[in-house]
Image 1 (cartoon, rainbow, N blue to C red):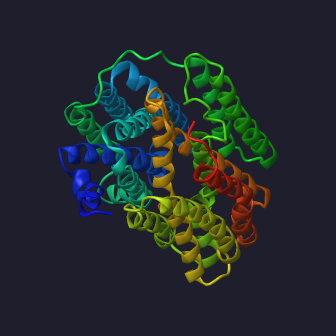
Image 2: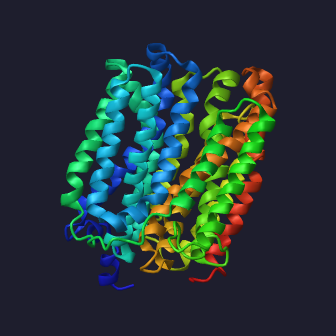
Image 3: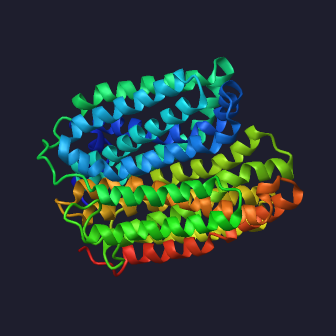
Length: 466
């Protein structure tokens, strides 16, 4: 490769020619979506003590998740209807309003409504960020942009709960939402200025209301499964939710106004294989972040802080791996994508074998393998999907990446939850239930990881670009 060609793919070239402010805005948008989705784990005990409604803890996450997925799925069409600049600024205002509502909430009902609105706002922000990447950055920069986005997400996974904890140390839980409101407000004010150069709105074909309604039903079923104590009912809801998501693909393929790109459910295409890989690999990874902390506290006597540090190795590995391969192109991006998927499968077996009784170093290895699996593969999967999109589908196809990821996270969390509850987790965490859960939260999702690995091979191999 010539020196000129190498320079055209450097970090300096990425951030040059006025692109740095756009890049910073996109990273802020991803941070807002990721960190706000995670902060409730730290602050909800304080919210419950202040507002009552301990029974509604899980709804704070479920409501946020439903709003975020629906918003992310609709972001592409809305950017076409209103223009990227105006839509992004409006998304920031919606999130700001949701944060203010939660900060001022006099009771748990208003608080949960605020969380739903925050989910809508942050989902749109993240979805519009993906559209901005697709429209405003040349293809030669996509790997580095996606690596940076992955890094921000990984950092937010670690710092989101820590951010909430630090604010609680010096103030109250309401201050967390005031700080997010300030960030979202700044994002909204900056968007019209920093997204100059995006194409004007041409009106778009409209909003696919039917697909969004069916998608909402599927996501709601999965979200309710996450908070259903009975394992048989929860499993039924998960299966029903995934089936309804499949129905969305069937309806969308036959609709004049589409929610997803052409043939998004077709595994013979790059887009179909890419979405499937993202969905199933994300679903397979959720048990570690959700269930490992209480298991580590029960079986190894760790404090919540130290258990959080152990889980944080996944985020650290994700970020470092993404940055390490950001410069890769050609045949190597396909190899890293496949290796990443295989590493995820390996990580599940390592964690199942070691989380309860193995040396802590092996637990760290398992977590690092899981994080690196996404760091090595995610940016290349996203780049391949974007490169395969037609101009007509570029907005909806790029924004769908966020919705696919979050929907996979919801499904994976529910499936891991069913596995944990079947071995006694929901009846109270003791040594026996912790040991059983430490195995089955990982083994239960191995089939999902294998499907994701197969999809990643399709993505990098025989799938066509149609």
